[in-house]
Amino acid sequence: MKLCIVGAGAIGGHLAGRLARGGAELSVVARGATLAAIRERGLVVRAPDGVIEARPRAAADPAELGPQDAVVVCTKVPALPAVARAIGPLLRPETPVVFVTNGIPWWYYARHGGPEEGSRVPEADPDGCVWDRIGPARAIGGVIYSACHVPEPGVAEVTSGSSKLILGEPDGTRSDRVLALAAAFKAGGLPCSVSPDIRTEVWAKLLNNLSNGPICVLTRRTMRDSFGDPVLRGAALQVVREGMAVAAAMGRPVPGTAEARIDLSANIPHKPSILQDLEAGRPMEVAALFQVVRRLARERGVPAPMLDLLVALAAQAAEAAGLYRPEEG
Ligand SMILES: NC(=O)C1=CN([C@@H]2O[C@H](COP(=O)(O)OP(=O)(O)OC[C@H]3O[C@@H](n4cnc5c(N)ncnc54)[C@H](OP(=O)(O)O)[C@@H]3O)[C@@H](O)[C@H]2O)C=CC1
Ligand SMILES: CC(C)(CO)C(=O)C(=O)O
Image 1 (spheres, rainbow, N blue to C red):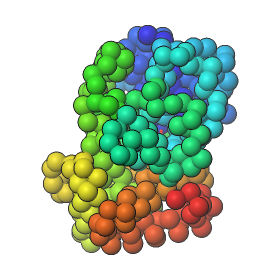
Image 2: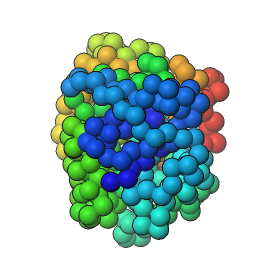
Image 3: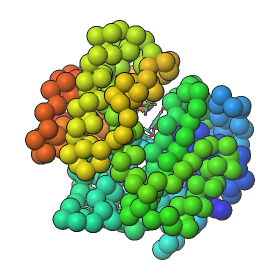
Image 4: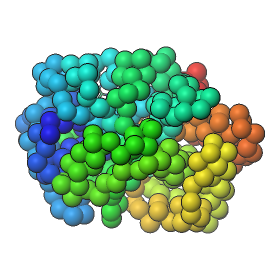
């Protein structure tokens, strides 16, 4: 299967390594120091189940790589409009595009059904460019549980003991294309399932980001260090409960307890990716991960006072660092 990863950072690097290990005909779209490192030394993944070394084709210009069987986009959400404008040369009319990003995705209301069909998510796709260029028919959702960072360009390090990827067609079908993609990841040793309800999976993962993201942006410490403080753990629990109420109001109740959600993060010595962005001076996913949930809570009349407070504080920190503009959402 001819597959291309766009954005070979922490998650893209990890997934690229898995696909290469599984035998995919792999290429990556990368840039700057990452591109130089991959061309020079290849791509390295340091995971608990071993080190993967891969030599994918790598280019900054998608036209060098040509049409693909599937494309997997792993950039941060603020980069998606630029990606959507650039990846045309990777796409045949039928090429699916998987989006492995946190937050409420741009495609949330695509192939959704009901009165909200075709609604947009401005926090994820401010000018509608991703929707217009990629189109809802190509979109496949991706939800990743894997705590990763980039210790040096071209190297992805996994700090969570286990990882898993959940894929899903927005209309819930078990299409041949989504099953083929799941098989390609599994062949590389990454547990990967296909969900008939990817939006509930989106919400479930987002509860983790809502609980650890704003708090760690403020503490600037790992999830393990931050949640070691019982007051902060209590605040995180309240945020998860509020997030669960918003998800339920959206018709996507997330099973399980808030405590179990916090426990997923509490022992991992990982700085959430949004804190990694703050420290590296990269645009922060405040709109697509946090502000969108505040908006949905307001629209559905769900009280979320702890979420409001923590997100307002984190948003101010991000804005003060010049890495988020409130106009984004
Ligand atoms: N890191 C983690 O542990 C987790 C992250 N996530 C989510 O996964 C997504 C990806 O995050 P993560 O991997 O951490 O992000 P990273 O910042 O580590 O990686 C993103 C990569 O995309 C590259 N990129 C950005 N724009 C382009 C472009 N136009 N063309 C080519 N390459 C581009 C970046 O290059 P450059 O360095 O030059 O900017 C970088 O290498 C996010 O939505 C995040 O929230 C989900 C679960 C865990
Ligand atoms: C912290 C983690 C692994 C889970 O919430 C994550 O999704 C991130 O770093 O962005």
